[in-house]
Length: 333
Length: 59
Image (cartoon, rainbow over all chains, first blue to last red; front, side):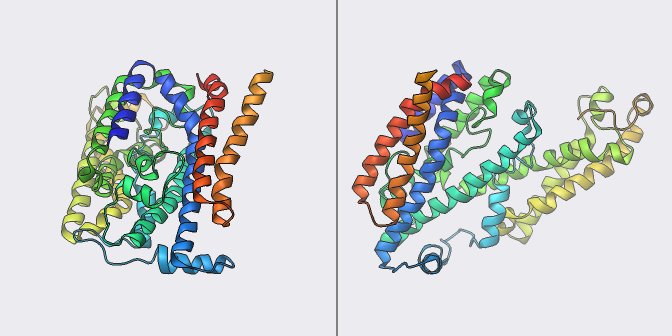
C-alpha cells in the first residue's frame, strides 16, 4: 500500500507538472519491466520443479508439470466465476477493451507518424496479457502450492512466495495497469513523440484515482469485474467510431454527421450506446454473470447495427439540406 | 558521443545480466540468493546507465 502511495504520488505530481519526465521514465522502465516479467516466470517455474520434485528431462515434462501442478484448475472461490480457457482468452482480448475496441487508443495513436505504430496495442497486449499473465499465474499457483489456505491475490503474498528479486511485484504492475497508453501518459514509445498534446491535468487526475483504488485490496480483488464493466461501457462508442469512419460513407450516409449538421449531439450514436449497454447488461443479469466476459463480442455488432439503422433514419430527418452540401465519403471522422 | 556509446553498451549488458541469472536458476546452476543480488545490481546498473541516453531521446 505504501509503495503504491509513494509511486502514485510521484507519478501524479510530476505528471501534473511535467509530463515529458513521466514519459521518459516510462520509456526507461519498459524494457527492464518486460524482462523482469519473464525472469519471474522462469524463477517460479524452477521453484515449482523443486517443490514438486519433478524430474525434467524435456519439454514434455514441463508440459506435464504445467497441467498437473501449475494450471491444474479447481473449484472457484465462493462468489467467483469459474474461469476456463475461454474466459482467459476473451478476457485477454477484452480487458483493455476501453482502450482498443473502445478506441481510447486513438487519443494517443491519432498523433502517430506511421500507421504501423498501431501495432503498439497488439504488442502491449502480448506482453501484458500473455507473458505477464503466465508469470503472474505461476507465482500465484506457487503461493497456493506452498500455502493452500492462502487464496488472497495479494501482491506481497504472491511476491514473497516467489521470493521475488529485483523490483516491484508483477501484480503491482498489473493493478496499476500494464503497458497501454493509459499506463503512463503515453506508454513506451509512442507518447514521447507528442507529450505536449496529452491533457495533462485530466491524465494526472485519472492516474491518481487509479493509485488510490490500488491501495484498497477489497477493490483490487474486484478488478476483473471492474475492468470488464468499464470496457463494456466504452465499447459501443468504439463501434460507432469505427462504423462512422469506415462503413457509413460506403452506405451512402454521412460520417461525422453531428459536425456537419452543426449539432452538439448525434442521437444515432447516443441511442446506439444506450441500447447496446441495456442489451448487454440485460444479458449479464438474465443469463448469468459469466457472460460479462463474453458479451462485448455480440455487443460490438449490436452497437454497429443499431448505429447504422438509426443513422439512416436520423440523417433523413435531421437537417436534410446537409446531405446535399457534402457528398458521401468526404467527411472526416 | 563516445560516452553515450559506452552507456548504451553497458546498459544493454545489464539487461543480459538481468535475464541470465533467471535462466541459470531454471537450469539449476545458480542459487536463488545469488540470483536476487545479480538482478538487483543489474537493475541499478540499467537505470543508472540507460537513463542518460534514453532520457535524451525522449526528453
